Image (cartoon, rainbow, N blue to C red; front, side, top):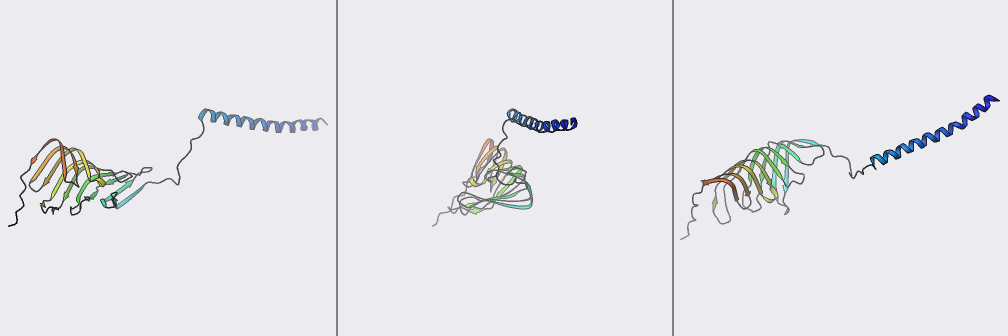
Length: 210
């Protein structure tokens, strides 16, 4: 009889202990939420984008009018993890002016960087560019042009570029040197910001028709 009473009291205590443990766990969780705050919402949609590496890569960029503005080839092109920008080794590029009849600027640099929208480019290390000779819309012959500088920032869709480093430009017998440069490749406009000097012989006048 005594043994059966002890068993009865022990069975009654078990549900009470379960209730106490559950209440303690709930209070602990509520205290954790109060101290740390509600969990942050994750607004990411879709699977995470992993980085990748391309070898012997080619890329094209078009201006708002749908015309080809920029091309680039490189032996190694990398998109870093969680970053849409491109890091490029030994890029070779072509910048296409908006005006018809003007040849592309061909160039190369040591390294390159392109933002995720494709509108901003960094050309790092020594930069060499050249443009073939051509005849402009007025019938005047334009000699081959070269540009040597470094650490260039370019906006290829706008045909603009600039650098704070030394620049050396040559077109035929004309030469320009300076520190710091801004250029509009579409309008053939070159501005040297400091310590500029050069050789600017007069252009030959077009011969009049008899």
